[in-house]
Amino acid sequence: MPKPKTLDPSESTRALYGAELRHQRERAGMSQEDLGAAMFVSGSFVGQLEAGLRRMRLEYARSVDEILGTDGFFVRNLEAARKSPYEHHFADVVEFEGLAQTIKEWGPTLVPGLLQTAAYTRAVVRAYDPVLTEDIVEERVAARQARAHIFDDPRTPRYWAILDEMALRRPVGGPAGMAEQLRHIAGMVRRHRIIVQVLPLAEGATAGMQGMFKLMTFEDAPPLSYTEGSETGRLFDDPAVVTRSVLTYDLLGGAALSPGASLALIEQAAKEYEDAHRSRPEDRDLA
Image 1: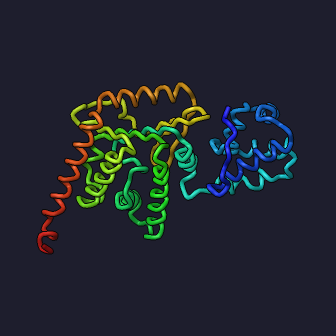
Image 2 (image 1 turned 45 degrees about the horizontal axis):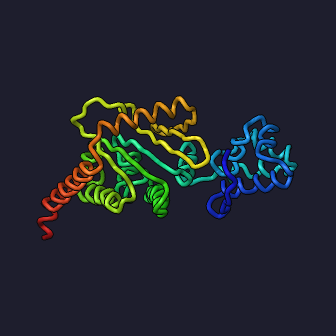
Image 3 (image 1 turned 60 degrees about the vertical axis):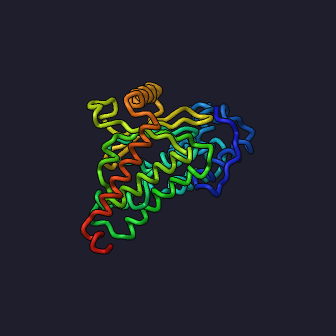
């Protein structure tokens, strides 16, 4: 069961919502198990709602209001608790990233969002929807950049990414932008903040060919697996699904280059992009 923890309601609307749930439960003299039994869920599930690890659904909000006598507070504020600058299917993932003890990602085609530079994200967003206004593009860039604040804490999360070599070779944002992106990743590795491996193209078929996924573990909640497609994504806490994702990640790690060899390849690719940028005709004309 999640351990009681002090939540900072200023961190997010969901933290405020969870803190209020805990306050009202304790005011009613109920344990997490008591409230869970009345809601027909587990005590650990209540703890996850209070810790912001679970998104409150309408049926649960109604039950809480009725059981705790909160005069419709949780139903009235349900939409506010769901508000996020991110797509609906991804909003939970962003909050879980901030709570995770470990994050492992497989990037088969693109650099994962947590590692992206602004220029790289801008190129990805613009390629996905060429007619977006500049304001919307910059809002999406800012939202993705904001996620990287989880790295401000030098201890958590422990982050490990496996990148397909294709993610290094596709020049997203052009040679200059790609050089900046790879130098950014290499810098985080050299500061010992993240671990990165590269899966060489020469490996051929791999366990991760079905697409990207992310694994997250928590101090006081079950692990989660997240997969994503176009305009959709899904979080799984089913132990069988998580176990399969862990096996896939282990197989990818076993086939990938070592972290040291991966860093060397990333820095080599960055240099190649820098050389390509300097050799462009327009750059020679300006020299």
